[in-house]
Length: 108
Length: 108
Image (cartoon, rainbow over all chains, first blue to last red; front, side, top):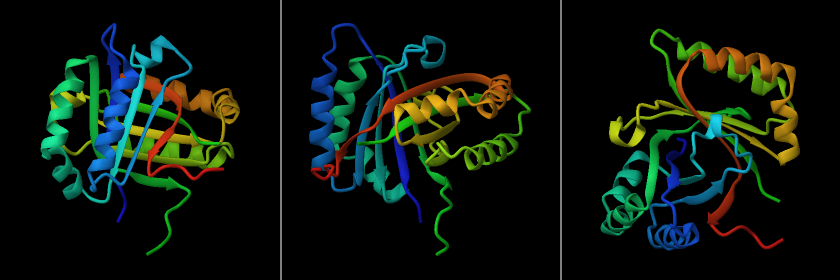
């Protein structure tokens, strides 16, 4: 049951056109069937003490840990990851099964 | 339209009982009507170069930026935040409207 998340917080290097990165990610997510959901966000409160300079969040959702692993090892992901990492000043990536608390998940 | 996310990545101090924190957060999310969804996750891949030592993700979802602001300024949130921050070694908090890319959001 549940969903497996691949979450990335990014601070880009000066001069990087983030819209281009988002376009590439959108293409990647569309091409890889294992990616169930893809979304992103840009911090709007700009509280430096809380954001630590990170500006963007990217999140991909998979049906299982196996689907995540398949995506991560896909050549299209590897090619993108190399470009992506080169554009970053700082990054944190976390991979986890999401535990739903509220609302309570249906009994199954 | 859309959802407003309050996302927190945490690395706890040694000796902190994370289950207790999660229990408090669960109670808080249940008590505050503005919190539409609450979930959390623990990184399972343990790739230090990617996680930078962060271990947990907490995410609350609100219907709007106004609901988020109401929650953040609520005395119950403030009381919890003080305890929470004291338990942390490192933290990143980001607040953003989530942009859904895949699947494409319905036209409305």
